Image (cartoon, rainbow, N blue to C red; front, side):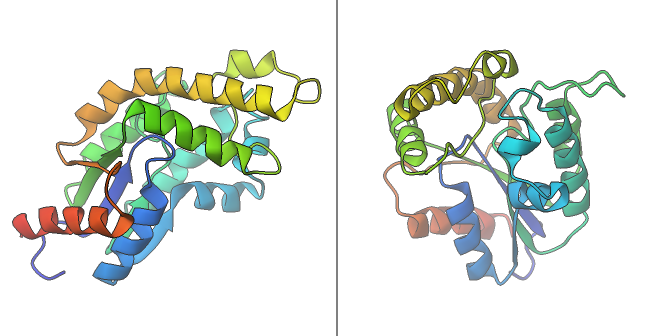
Length: 213
């Protein structure tokens, strides 16, 4: 898009709000590169995030790699980025700085003048149903528990898939309550994806960009 003040767009929001699908379609519409941050982290780690975090028991290695991926990604131009749900809102402490990785990442994001941040969201009931459906459709649970203390108390071999999914969903919704006000502060550009198709969401974001030319 010519004459747009932004040369990169980052989509934020909790899991299951449609970040990846929207980012792919928006990148195709703009003719820009699409980047999925979680995929880049797994590529660097050479393992999926659930293993990198020991199924949620230790988030520090993942958040450290996430910070690295973010720094590298923000150097690029003409990219649409699907951010991890916690990239700018997590409370995992970086022992080198004493700050949360979410704070460190938020500073990087807010300091990038060529970056447009957009927050996607849906209602809580829909979010809960989407996460549960997503997990139940996997042969193994897809995402680790976000609460490391809770994760340490779970033996996945001793509980049923249904019980584990309920734990994951309940934990996710508690974390969403913590993160929601932080998402709200992250960007004034927010798009409700609940009753819109991915294509319609892309058009909403595109219309915002047109007004910012």
